[in-house]
Every structure is written in structure tokens, then in C-alpha cells.
Amino acid sequence: MNACSVTSLRGMMAMRPKLKAALIAALIVMGSNAKADCTRTEFRDQSFTYCVAHAGDDVRLFLYSGENQVHGSFRSIDEALARDGKRLAFALNGSMYHPDRSPVGLYIEDGAEVSRIVTSAGPGNFGLLPNGVFCIEDTRFTLIESLRFDADRPDCRYAAQSGPMLIIDGAYHPRFIPDSDSRLIRNGVGVSPDGTRAVFAISNTPVNFHEFARFFRDYLSLPQALYIDGNVSRLHAPALRRSDWGTLLGPIVGKVVDADAATN
Image 1 (tube, rainbow, N blue to C red):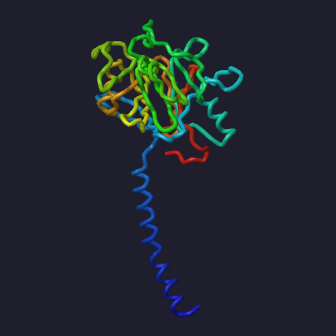
Image 2 (spheres, one colour):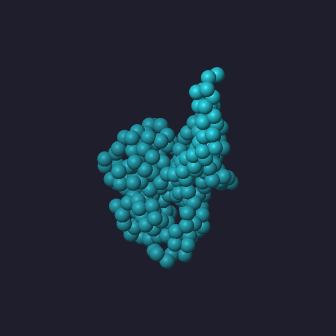
């Protein structure tokens, strides 16, 4: 080895601590700037968790595992996805359902319409018009009031109807009472104006409809939001070390990623 090589090698060795420090600093910055799928937050002394999906993400609705057997749980879906080298990044119950866990109202899975749209008023939260349809298209998300959806349907690969609407064009549902004492753990979904983001949220403490809608409008700044359910609201968020079990579910909505994808 010549003198120049020795000098160069010594220079590299001397730089190693600095390089190591720089690399560590870069990793810290990258980590602090990384956006997790799901985030827990506080708003007006109430606790919520929300999960964000972007246009182009693999977001799906799940109901049947095969031969009319309902998945019913996040674990069942993860086991099915694992066979294709996939897993759930996050998931929530995706719509209201009947006692046999079949969907209430419109339900489309992978382009196939499983259940028809319901546009008439009826009992319960679902029938508290206006209700709406959450639609997953190939390049965007849409959330549309049910009558408008039925009159001019987008091309949904997946869709689920639920109700009531929480936020309609930036306004609260007209039937909401700000000081209502009807409080539950509730979950829902909102969509950005350009359709590039869908935000799924669940309250960690019981809230009424007005308080839940307020979170979507005033904290998440979303002009359209749809209630999904209350009594059976569940969240699967591995990055938060949370997976709610218990009640068997009907339709489930979730973001799918490769099984070896890093957990934020």
C-alpha cells in the first residue's frame, strides 16, 4: 500500500465518527417527518384516533371470506391476506349490518354489487336522512349523499352506504343537537375536497353526533363526512399497538400493504 493510500485510509477512519453522527441525525429527522397511518389526538378535551389513506393506496372493503362465510374480524382478514404476502396497515368496521352481518344499504366489493342502495327514510341512524355513500374509485375517494349518488353514480370499485351524514358540504347534519346526551364510541369517514384523502376516525371516549361531526369539520378540515357506527365501533391499528376485538363485525374497511412493509 502506498503512502497516498495510507493517508486516504487514515482520513476515512478519522471521518467515521462524524459520518456516524450525521447518519444518526438524518435518521432522526426522517423519523420525525414520517407520517404514520394512524394518529391519536385530543380535541376540545375529547380523545380521537384517525387513520389516513391517500389516493392510490390499496384500500378495500371486506365482507365474505369465501362461500358466504363472513370474515367477521380483523384477524380473519389478516390471515387471508397473508397468503398473498399482504397485511392490514389499519382497518375499522366499514358499514352498518343486519343480524346475519350482511350490509345495510348499498355495498360494493371488488366491483360486484352485493346489496342495493336504500334512498328512503327509515328507523335508526341509517334512516336519518340525509345519509351517504363512501366510494373507493381507482384514482380517488368520493363521499356523496345517497340520492345524489343514485342519480349519478361514480365508478366505485368498493362502496358502502351508511348514515347519517355528519358533514354535508361543510355544514352539520340538520338534525344534530349540540348538547345531546346520546354518547357512544363512534366511528366514521371523511373525504378531502379533491378526493385524494380519506380519513377514518374513531372516538376514544363517548361523543354525541355533533361533537363527532365537529372533529371532522373543525379539526380534520373535511367538508364531507359520514357516520359508520357506534355500538360496534372497532379499530385495528398495529402501529399504535391497538386491535379491538370482541363483537363479530359485518363489512370491514382497511388499507392493505405488503406484509414486510415497515410499521410507522
